[in-house]
Length: 136
Image 1 (cartoon, rainbow, N blue to C red):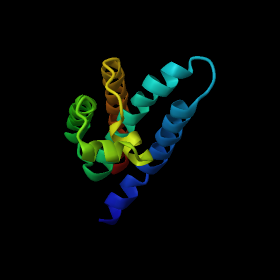
Image 2: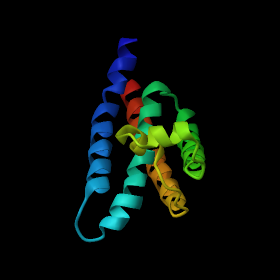
Image 3: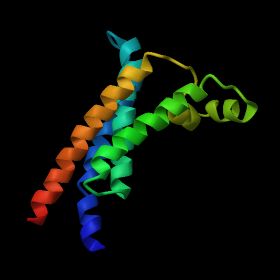
Image 4: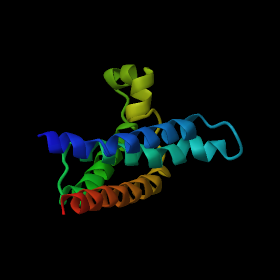
C-alpha cells in the first residue's frame, strides 16, 4: 500500500503541469486565442483525465485502455452538448459544469481529443516504464 502511494506521487506533478497548461490555454488572450481557448485546451483536458484515471488504475494494461476510455467518454460528453434538458443546462450554467461537460458541440474537438489521448497514452507509457524501471 505504501509503495502504491509512493508510485502515485510521480503523477501529482504531471497533473499540476497539465492542469496549469489547460487553464493557461483556456484563458490565453494573445494571438491565436480562439484555437488555444477552444481546441488547444481540449488536448490538455484529455491528458488530465488520462492521468487521473492512471492514478487509480496503475497497471500496464491500463496504459492502453485509459486513453481509449477517456476518448470514448469525452466523445459521449461532446454529443451530450447537443441535448439541452433543464438539469444539464443548470449544470452547464455553473463554472464547474462548463469546465467538465462543456456548453457547445464542436466537431473540431474530436481531432483534438484524439491528439490529447495520444499524448496522454505516451505520458502514461513513460510513467509506466519509469515505474517498471524502479521496480528492477
